Length: 200
Image (cartoon, rainbow, N blue to C red; front, side, top):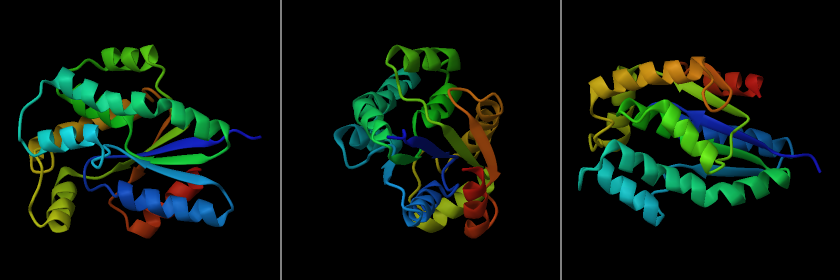
């Protein structure tokens, strides 16, 4: 049996990751592929609820504690991810450990420390991470419209979003943790989707 693939869709909030994950899944299903969609954080699970409460400022967590909480989701799922890939499935994930590298890396956790942690716990490395690059202004505009102004601590912080773009650029250009590809997420949904199809 041919091994499956593991593809990540990444970017700051509002980049279109959820939409492009769904479109890519639909496209590959029509090609007769066996697909499994993932999303992180998993807000409907206990760990995801903890993350949600942090994002909406019900309490504060140090950057290292944030990293470990996010990280626990990938450790929790790694055996199932390996099994799905071995069974030939194509896994498409809206965010992954690649987000932790950027967000917690920006907040002061060394990138080398995060990579070492991923190696220590044998976190599954994707075949490709597709970074949908948008401006901080586009991010806030899209999320404000989507959530009618109910933004979390990351989404409403324009300075944070600017810094996140810089870290995403650095991580992507250096292919940290896996192979990265950069797509202009400011384009139409259809244009972004077509470029993703070309990449894979």
